Amino acid sequence: LGYKARIAVVNRGNVYLENDTLPNLEKFNHAIVKAISPSGKTYWIDPTNIVSMANGIFPDIADRPSLVLDPENPSYERIPPIDHQRAITRYTESITLQDNGLVKTEGSFSIEGESAKGLTEYINMHHESTVKEGMIKELCNSSDPINPILNLSACKTCKVKPITATFSYEENNVTTLTNLGKAFPLKGSWYKPYIATSQKDKGALYVGSPHTVIKKRIFKNVSATNLDALAYSIQTPWVKAKRELSMTKEGLVVTDTVEILKTIIPAKDLKSPEFAKLKETLRQSCEGSAIVFTKP
Image 1: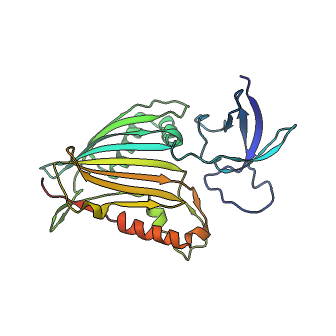
Image 2: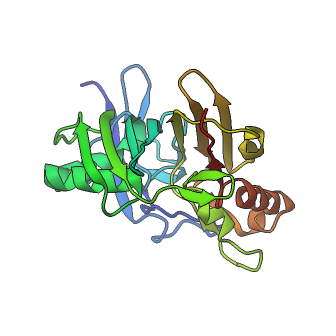
């Protein structure tokens, strides 16, 4: 093919902690391939995985040193980090509070780049019915959804490609009755590792590979006031996040955008005033937040 290929060794593992020690066997526990195309583009390829992703970087080798074993020109290089703007998942959900007390959700999602790696592996290793059952339960955070339907675009393949799906399901006992009306919880889990840490902790925090999630929820036939109280915006070196709310012709629209920028947050950062402010914002804006509806 005209590619220049060299063996490279790296420390393979989802969690990689920087240290100042000299190169040793513990730093290089796995062999991969550094390939350079005829046009000069570099690819870091690991042929030992059950799926192939030449146009991306596997999370367990990304953003760490590598020793390239070139007999003529050996080099000590750093594998690039995952681009969070490539590893992206988008959700769109239409939510209807029905007269029978059930909440119906219809929607779609698309998952691209490195974010599609895990689902591609899961599809390859499990029966289609198992995949659909697991995905529906993950979408609705329920072990017993009603009338679940999932149409998945992906088939068993070794190549990591964009995956799309449409889905619908119903749930019972989703809303909470308050003295102001029905409240719908704005569930989420991405923020939990950040608020679960303590300044007394001595270790670093692992939050997963860099990626972006955009989730748009449209609540039909309801209205609400004081929406600005639930909006927020976070800009930090580790994570960016925001929530936007508006009343439109479609209904009440809630859009959450989360950008995970760093896989590991060092212990010294966890003790910083900026991280303490991040935790407080997440506690106030994400943990236990809900919308109280009124009929339009």
